[in-house]
Image 1 (tube, helix red, strand yellow):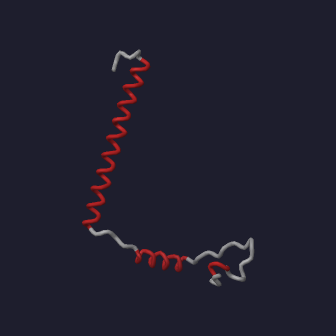
Image 2 (cartoon, rainbow, N blue to C red):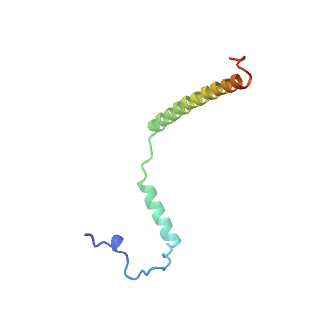
Image 3 (cartoon, rainbow, N blue to C red):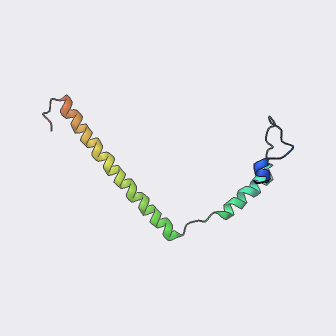
Length: 85
């Protein structure tokens, strides 16, 4: 079993106590520290990701457009008596 404070909690915390707020300078230091850990993509990766996303969006637009056109024609055929197929 673990005896870390993350599992056990601080002994001076009582149920019903509000959590302590982090000061603004501490928050800023933590944000900067986290941003230093970020691995940014290279330009080549960025271009590749851009084209992959654009391809996916275009494929999805085609599928949705085809379904819209098909359901629209079906609705006109059902409500117009089947003359427009």
